Image (cartoon, rainbow, N blue to C red; front, side, top):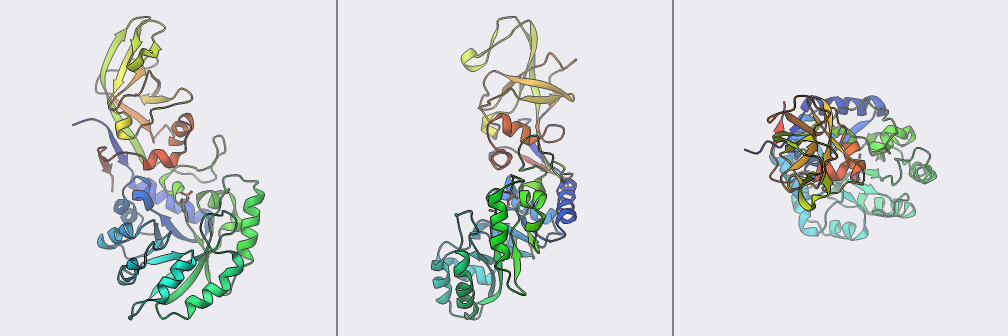
Length: 355
Ligand SMILES: Cc1ncc(COP(=O)(O)O)c(C=O)c1O
């Protein structure tokens, strides 16, 4: 068996949910789409038994959660894509986001006894999905008249909440507040909104990334929550050899040893979802010490400079990101964001879950 795996820490996941509650004091819709940001959809939802609701991106994810026994509200964040999904939504008690008139029209065609709650999405400035603020009262009235609609809520999404001084976010909050209708449940804040914009907390928050222990804020911005990484990407040294000064390492021979030195081969590569391109040098942890990655990343392996790791030997555990090595740091060096690394682990990589 290859030594690469993603180990998943249930207590860290629960701890991060508690941090969300402590920061926001709001009800929590845990965002678990994209296979729980790569952590496993049902494992995340079952571990977060205390969450008030879950947010997913598709009917398939919603059904998978229901089939695994999840009883909380399940919100389809993009609603339905086709009217044929509505009977399943009603049967499985899912809660679609309604963001466009074609969805309202499709709901008007529903016959039968089932009912569902909905969230109305308003575009407060992201200009991706949602009704114009001025359209909202009429849309809500149309939906209120339909027998298949139970409760309605109002939801919007922040485009620039990572920037603590964003005029765009202030504008989005203002437009959202302008729509405060009595008795209506409301939701605006993602992770960055929860961390930096108390005025966006309203009564429901929608954390994704921070639940998994990573920060959406720019590098060097301290996260206000004490988050713990849920996923640790691990492997082992599968070879340790002393190389000579001038030896070229790996594909293309792009790294040449500056002196005689020990070089380790780690059993993980881009075929597992580890990035292949880096803009700055990145390290792994071996025996708690940083070992810089050298040469090109292969599909199943990568090579590391072991000069700083005394006594490194075959079989030593290697941490690629997670405990002791923030995924944000690896993402930054790869010119990307932690979201893509967590979601990008491939099918072949085993997940080892703690309880
Ligand atoms: C509508 C909506 N709400 C909440 C989130 C969670 O965002 P984050 O992972 O930044 O907390 C997302 C994620 O993309 C989203 O699309």
